Amino acid sequence: MSQRMLRGMAAGLGALVTLGSMAGCGTDGQVQKVTSIKIGVTVYDQYDTFVSQMMTDFNEYAAEQEEQTGIAINVEVYNAAGSQSTQNSQVEEMLDAGCNVICVNLVDRTEPTTIIDMAEKNNVPVIFFNRELVEEDLERWDRVYYVGAKAFESGIMQGEIAADAFKENPDADKNGDGVFQYVVLEGEAGHQDAIVRTEYAVSTIIDNGVEVEKLAYGIANWNRAQAQTKMTQMLAEYDGEIELVIANNDDMALGAIDALKTSDLKRADWPVVVGIDGTDVGLAAVASGEMVGTVYNDKEGQAQAMLDLAYALSVGDTLDDLNLENGKYIRLPYSKVGSRDVKNYMK
View 1 (tube, rainbow, N blue to C red):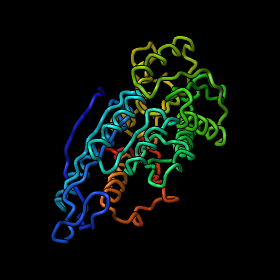
View 2: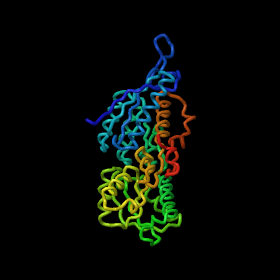
View 3: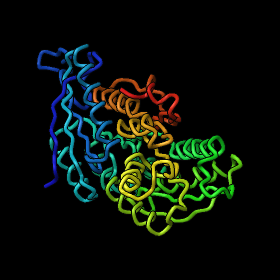
View 4: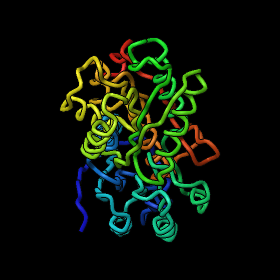
């Protein structure tokens, strides 16, 4: 069976609700109180730094809300370990266990059909998060939602960080040819977020008046160790020619830095490295100067929004105050982080 992390947490927003899907009237005709709900969560990879930190925030917010109301929220978190079939089985298990709402960080964003169909059959709402499914799938049922951010915004901001680094620091142009020679570390082959982040980062650099030349790219699956391997290979092939590393997330940016640390390049000769996500370790790399900048993906805001939505769906509260876009989406904005303001984002 799948790897599983089980953490029971208590939380709530404090309301008495009439029994709908989760409660009913007692034999004396009195309306019963909601005392507990169960939220099932499955993540594509528990070792993904951003996802792991987001789930930590999610559980912390649940605990804080319990102190306010005493309504218990039991949170069950499963690790799909990169397998969509495993994730489908986990959702089935959560439904069988009586979860009031399911939160899914999809393994394969093109394969949500099985999960949506199971949820609809059991009339249990499902919240997809962080890895956005295609719009047509989100419209398959009126109780399907998404919490995350717009991928193209992160690409634009990453490109702005890179362009500013080239224009403001003459040393970034190692060979003095006026062109930013770059490599890309991509998240997944064919993954929309990876494609969009790369496309918008590069086009934004050009739009900001900086000429670029692509030397190479490597698929590193959002993974630090894989990125280190890919970067080591590119450093060997393009000895001293790489001036910019565009990484689709901080873990891969850090993998590139790991490769640079073990290379023969002096620190002053390192290329500009930019990431996305603003993880704790990514922010530390910006603070140290190893990474020029990152794009902060609001994991705290997304965790809070997902908890608020999951709770409201579970107890039948109105969704009017949750700022749902088109009744389906909650998206949090990105923000650029550089050495000047990184301390504002560090815990």
